[in-house]
Length: 434
Image 1: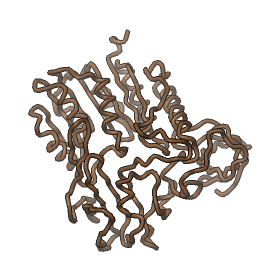
Image 2: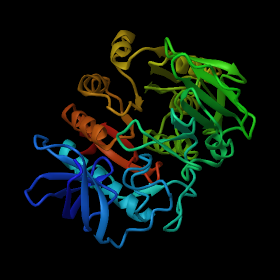
Image 3: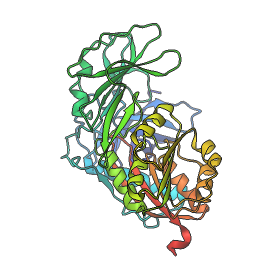
Image 4: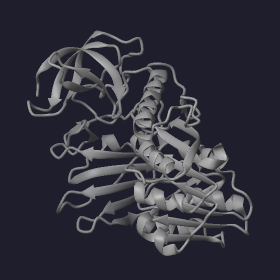
């Protein structure tokens, strides 16, 4: 740790870094660099026994044509860990994400882009095509860490609990920035999550106090609801204002309570619903599953399209999200939401066949047992929504083993300046593709 090497930088890798090797052949995973550059890399993690070392590019000797001066003053070695690619042109960021997705598909699923029905591009969200050196303000939910010594809000440094105090987060949406969280004293708080709904003017902060600390009087620059995370049970409780925010997608309003999950980019929900519906092409009277359904985003979209003769079952593990989903979809008589883990609830339903499936699993993916169960249901189309290329590729490989092929795959840059990419894969029984 702390040792420096002059190296040539190789290809991008999954995780927001590039691969290089020391003169002795040790693998370096290096942040703040780009393929083809010559740099001085300083080791940040690892020792003589480590299989690989982590490092930062502290000096750029020969720069890539895709490099720009990082617009954010808090980006760079040893500073904020929120963004991975501030130093790359926007178009280059999307190409890097496409290279990562291509490599993961080949290595874990045995698929080329052509075999996955993917044109090899990562599409920016509407309004996010900005010139080099500019940053789209897209993040509608920001969890600030609080420096225990100063009470200032900031963001954690990469792979660290240390806090980088900031005056302004450039990727934060306007609705978050206008709250003025960074200018307040949050002494006694562990974290402050700021939420700005895109379907309404609802604003919310979720406070996590340190053990034994009292909540501060929250006076921000805009009206805001306040919730707190309970020290004992981790539950989220209302302090004042609404316990939920109202989001909007696909022409419908969704209640999202207690800081629950909703897509972070303001265009993400509509973008993903459109991609899923174009892939599934629901028909009147069909039956569908919405797995890991959250507050019912995809279940509502499918229910609209399958009509009164169709039926949708959603499964979600988070109790509050299930309550919200039932509220959001109360107008549909033939939509049912069950609480529990997908792998436990789905077998108990007794369902043996279904027309359509959409799944949006957590970052770890669905896993082989769940994929096997889903493949046995014989759906004519399956939509897999994924935020992690490796988990997506692994599960697509499992689906392939169980008789499904990828008909189409689309990739969206819904997390600009970071390593993350959102994908929608549409699958169908393999025999239909012959």
